[in-house]
Each structure stands twice: as structure tokens, then as C-alpha cells.
Length: 101
Length: 404
Image (tube, rainbow over all chains, first blue to last red; front, side, top):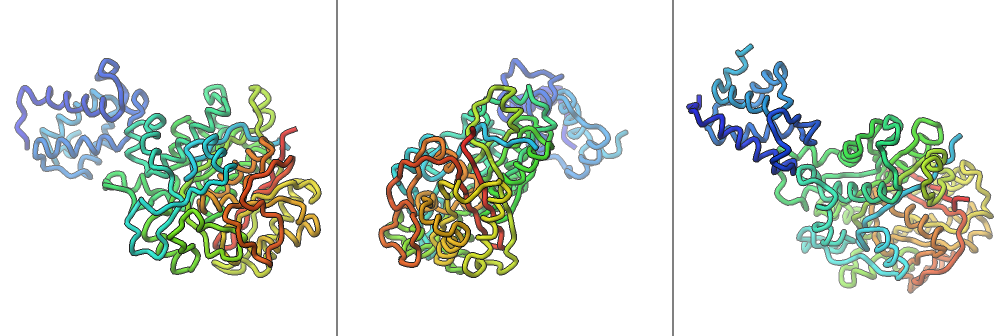
């Protein structure tokens, strides 16, 4: 399990925002936690996998995508804010995220 | 039954990245064939192809978002760019259309082109190589909710796609269908494979002279890259929005020879049957046909049998119809050929110019029709045929007419 500090959420948010600004070619001013990834930014589901790979390396997480997939089916993240929240849970719980309700 | 018209079209070939550039080079009789640059072909028997100009890499960024581009191969990008250009030319605003009645049907043999795609990422491998990628991206771009799919019938693929699009509109199932195709098989595996079938020209020393349909010394086709997209629309839809109508698709025929996996039926019998069916389907008399854009691959059998088939169907009139092969200049664009050559045919109708068959310096005594040797010709065309034939016995003939 990665060590979560006060700064972790800020790091995650900054990474997620930078990722979408770069990949979706959107202006930073048009992006907020309520932005819908597919509807508002023409994003795609592959982006989530790419972000997980980034965080897996950054925080040396012990996770498997199929485990996260089981959680995502029950708790889909449609907005940028929801994605950040989910990322925080993944960092905190790693593979045990599947046990969360 | 709805009349089916063309309201937009665009193409990318070795001779250019848009319709105007291609047309100017085709009329000038230029060849797009050169040494292969997409991979190291030094070990291949054939080392030439008609590749899309390298300047395409600096062009597509204006049409495709970076994120989407990362999930496309270069030929999917070419098809996407063509579709955007064709839609722009048509002036259609899909926001004002019933999107459930707008479809995309494209012909393609493969989008993968594996060995010439650099740095393939595992996460995008499937998305890049899936055969339906082109139609899917175009549907996504315009949020079209009618069916989108690809048709694979080898070198007749995009001609089949156009025929199916025609049927959808004619039957009232759709108002607008984006049709066409794109292909790139300039990679080591395909070149070697076709070499083992003795299908490709091996005239590597003078690439621009290698594709020489209907000539006595023809020695096979030259692989070309390309994309061609047309906007098919019901006449009612086009008129309702005051669109410029470029031509009418009058009918078509698709058939199977059920003879041989590679060779055409002896004496062009299957080809003749397909031409005859297309004429009947489009209610066209042989006297009305002013031009034939031949399949004209530059292989011994195709050119001979296509000529025999035209003679069978048209009799003495065959000698009065100009026939030319675009492949002499742009190579064989495989799954894209039917669409690209239909676009060239429509342009010929509207410009009153027949593009030439270049490299026809040594006529084959057996092939004695008017192949518009080497030089373009002014010619009034009200009705034309575009032929496509393929390994597997897939034949397609499209009939296109000046819109009156």
C-alpha cells in the first residue's frame, strides 16, 4: 500500500488534469471536477487504463487491472472528480479495493 | 425508389493529398510509383510501390485530434482525412440530419500495416488493427447512428461498399451514406506474399514505368496506398439542402465467379456477366456508355480477360469506347481501388477529360481497344463504368452518370 500524505490528492489531481489537457487537447480553464470525460472531452475508456499505469509506476502500486475492473463495473467514474476519487481509493487500498462496497 | 447522387468526394493517393492535386497529376499522366520508403525492401523481389506522399504526416494533424490519431494507423488517418474533406465538399451539416439515417460503409482489406507502423503500443494495437476502425472513427466524428461497417472483398472491397451504400439509399433505409475505402499493404509480408504469387511487377530500376496495363510487356501490378471517400445521398435529401450534385450512381452489379481463388474465369466470362448485370441494373444501353475506367491491373490475365469481357458485352461498340487504367499512375490501391477509381471517373465526367493509361508504349497485339495511351483526352461523358475485380472471384461494376 502506498503511503498517503496530505499532498497525495494534489499530486493525483495535477497528474489527472495534465493528462486530460494533453490527451484531449482541452484548455485548462475548461476543465473542472464536474467535467464529463467522454461527453465533454471526447475522451475514451482507454484513458482510465493509461492513468492507472501512470499511478502504478508513480506510487509502485500492487494492483491488477482486472481487480480494478471489478470495482469499476460497480462504481463507474464518469467525471474527472470521480476519477480522482477512485484513484485515491486505488492508491489507498490497492488490490483490496475489490472488497469495498 | 430514391435516386442516389454523389454530393462530396475526396481522395488521397501517391499523386496527391486532395482531389485537385490528384486530378492535375492524373491528367498530366504522372506516375506515383517510386522506391519503397516505408520499410527496408532491399531483400524483396519487388522494391517499388505507389506510397502516399510523406507530406501526409504533416497534414493529418489539421484533421485529427492527437488522442484519436494515436489509436489509428496511417491508412486509417488517410481515410479519416478523406472523409472530412468529402463531408466538407458536400456542405452537409449532420446536426441538421436525422443521424439514425446516416451510415458509413467502407471497403478495406487491412488497417494493420504492422511492419511499417513505428513504435506500436500494446494498449492501442487492437484498436489500430481492427478492420472496422475506419468506419467507426468516422461514425464517432459525426455522431452518426446508422450502421457503420467495413466490407472485405479484396480488391473490390470499396466498390462493394459503394454498391451497398447505394442500396441503402435506394431502398429508403438511409438518407446519407459515407462510402469508400482505404488501404495500405506496403509492408514486407504483403510484398513477399504477392511476389510468391507472381502478381507484382519487378521492374525496380525504373519505378515510374513499372505499371503498364494493356501493354505487351506488362509484368504484374504495383501496390499502391490510397483512400477515397464519397458522400452518397438521396436526391431528395440533396435537393432539400440545395447541395451541389456531382453525379448520379445509376446502378451496379456485384457477383462471384465461383471459379478460382486467384485466377479470373477463362476468357473474362465472369467479368462480362458482371458488366452485363450492371448495365441491366442501371437500365443502361450499351450505346450510352461513353467511358470505362478499367480494373486494368497490368497483370497478364486481368488485362486480357477484361478486354475480352468488354468486347463480349459491347460488341463492335467496344472499339469506340475510351478505356483507361488509373492504376498505371497510382498503382493498385487494393481495397481502396474501387472508390478511388469511381472518384476519378466522376471527375472525368464533370471535367470532360479521360485520364490516360500511361506506359502504354508497346501495345499488346491481342489487346486492341482504345486504352487512351499515355495522353489525356477531351471527351464528353454522360455515362461511365468503373470496374473492380478481386482475388476470390469478387467482381464489381459501378455505373455512374452525369446528373441531369
